[in-house]
Image (cartoon, rainbow, N blue to C red; front, side, top):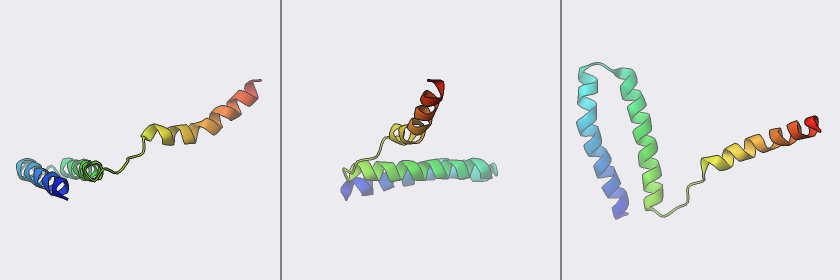
Length: 77
């Protein structure tokens, strides 16, 4: 729990430093992308802080492309 609070405090500091210049320059799209990436990073960091496992993105790619690879291999035989 303490790790989660620390991560949220660091995220708040990042927001406090980065967001006002983006709002001042009216960079709405950049602020949206920044917010999405920060939210993803916070979520992953808290998950790791709670010692949960995060699936490897390569496993998803293998799951998607393995059947396609098998079909192509059958067609080329």
